[in-house]
Length: 271
Image 1 (spheres, rainbow, N blue to C red):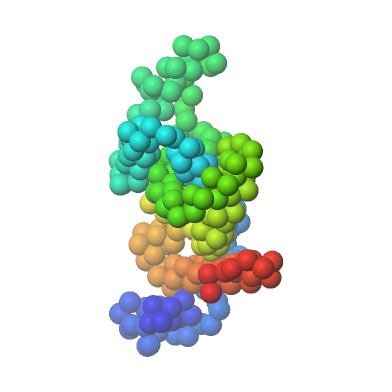
Image 2: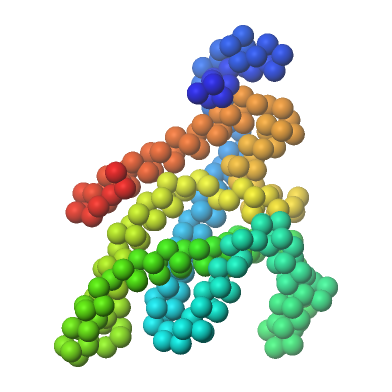
């Protein structure tokens, strides 16, 4: 709460929080009227939604596929490979992706040129129209393993007798997945979906910051990077705090609203 007060003050670092002039919602109004407001909001929401659309179902599908694998050795190797990127920092991930998509000897560009799909290398990290795709793809690649483990644990708790009964009734593997596996892990899916929606403005500070550059700011400037630049680079602490408070309020509203709507449908919410 001590830090939140700064959002409602004309903060002076020498006078301190309590001695600084109280300005009410002026910092919030200044942010809403700032020309950058629409840019950072659009980018934050768009990147978050794209991550949700592509990143949320990916671990579910991978978990179901791995659950169908009968070769234990292959299954464990696949799990390990998919999970390893989760432990790699975004700085390292960005470096790997820069090398893979480099215009000078990058594997992806070389392959596309070799296949005749493009005539010359593409500057993937210099084209504003491509950066959202790069951010989402790298996020899915890094996070799919962790989500897969959560869903696999949920799938493993399903009573095997249900599958045995389904086989006796003549159900194929697809029907078993559709009528047994998915309904069984639905509570886990709902829980993670609510938590993901609560972070609708959390586009991923560290990832976006290490991947953005001056050429991409129109598409890669998000709320978190904007807050950092306002607070650290420009020393506008009250403005940065106000933006952070705004983001937190939106997240709480999204969390409570979605949880309420989920419970209205008869499903179990997170509280």
